[in-house]
Length: 149
Image (tube, rainbow, N blue to C red; front, side):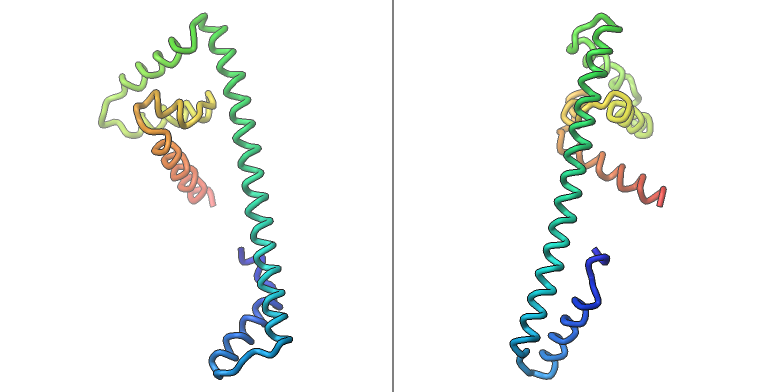
């Protein structure tokens, strides 16, 4: 966001605050410049947010396509129905000791990263709501990013 703070924007903001401090009105030209620079800032911010959203949507679609492919492969290799495969994953998760949070985390990450399961499906397997899984994945991704950077 700091990339959008142009010297012109900072200048007009400074002008506006100094005018308020001095209890004077901005001239028509100063108000116009201020409105223009604020509009440019908002537009740049909106375009940036739209680009991020489009990228996230693209990544989700890729994740979904990978899941569909992996699902077909697992069903062919194991000669099982999808319900039997998910039951197997539920049994694997249930076999993890209740106090072994690290193993539970590793299992959920494996489902997401290796098998491309959706947070909804992971929630069904580990008996948590999809929203809880989404929040957990976002928190994990944030912490992982903090460790890298």
